[in-house]
Image 1 (cartoon, rainbow, N blue to C red):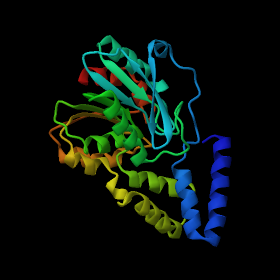
Image 2: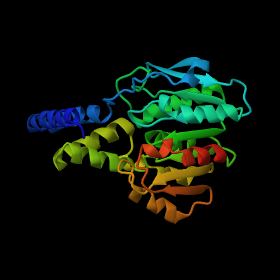
Image 3: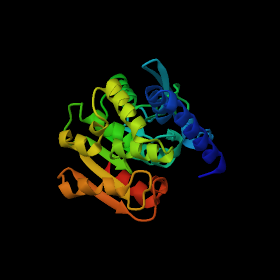
Length: 280
């Protein structure tokens, strides 16, 4: 962790601890906002492939969501989804490959990410964005996602009519939301009393427990063909969350396990890129 990140964490920890003394409910509301806020935005220049793209924009819950389309009218449509504090800019290698295969490619920055508007991102909001893309740009046959994008994708697919002709490539997907909440509370050293209020707030907003937001749960309702790529050394979306899914031996899910690539290098790896392109 960089010095600036450590200072930011220490500041947020002190602020929440002090607020919790006055009101755990108020501290939980503040913690929830922090949890849903991407503090880093990818500001690098658009890669060369974006010069040939058609800019797109849609409105999702008052947020202007911006993205791009390539090769309109291609043989199939594919949608690319990024993770938390990431951007579609990071997936230019995939975009180029899919254009070569004559696919129509769609890619959008999620709310509060990249060039899209908004201050916060939640899983329901990400799913709402996917619904909007689907209904505005037509049915999509293939999807690839990384990290938080994979969690959103599976929860979107389970709500939509589909069969095994729909293909999903999940790269290091965020398997269990509970894991991220646990990590968030450990990072900020927040106590159990505040966690109780946090969980109550999440339930009030979503209408379900945090455990509902789980790929392992959503898979029970998914018939799509899935390629799941994960690294054993991933410290963001830990492999321990994936192991129970592997043991269930879903007939529509194939696993590709890597070693030493972690959470971010994995989607840049040439072998992984080839595996995703070949699968889709």
